[in-house]
Length: 349
Ligand code: EPS
Image 1: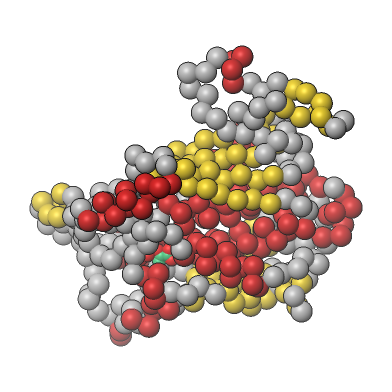
Image 2: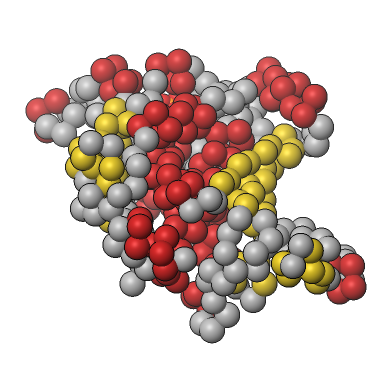
């Protein structure tokens, strides 16, 4: 059974986003300023649309914390959607408020609209857009911030860097790539890397396919909206074994490696080197210059739906990926060492 579990709920323009986390040991300092700083980091980044001028994401903790510390019970979190004020009728839960004001029926190629509407038998694609929106990553980052607070207590810290936007690999050109896409009514993707340092050896396992930490990280990062590629360490394509594999050495009495092409994972387990996870985000599918599509009411050729969106959200996505890796690491640490209080967990480690 997983040790760090949670569910989230919330639509992009609904009242709020929520999460309930189970498995946070008691005695963890729940630093609200840190959680809010993480939420702010996710909101920032060049290329974000006007929605980010409306939102000012702040966490509300509803349970599981007293006087700044976790008490072992489920932690319920909430982030309000400021934009709900402008969508009250459209997103109302009451049948008498029905309006088709923001309904749409033309699929955006690349979005969840088509498959989601077939799967859930919906004509109004708003019913798919609202949950498939990347807005839900706000509450995921709040959950990630709680996971990071546990990791911090154990001396494990993560960070992320954008390494490519469109075809540009040099940060000096990132804004230019985004500006050009925006001027053309287009969107642009990119690549980022997440690094976690100071992990113990042996998180994950080689003994069963579903216990490998690389597989768990890949699933957690791949399922962020718009991620199409996840890599651990250096992409080995075209390298010989002698070039790729990381030779051993002993430094200050510690076993370590000359290089870290494996990205800190061998045999589905952490090996004590830095964990290095890269991912590629596709260009966002909501574009001012729409692609050809069809209308699901008539099956006639049409232009894809457009509404306010981001031209590029790669920087935000990197923060989301940091959070997702943090969840996986906390779960693996709790699985390996166990502990109902942070003191017990530390003692076990
Ligand atoms: C999103 C569309 C935009 C983004 C949104 C994700 O929202 P809106 O349709 O309200 O303009 O800003 O991202 C967020 C709201 C957020 O908090 O990251 C989409 O369709 O995925």
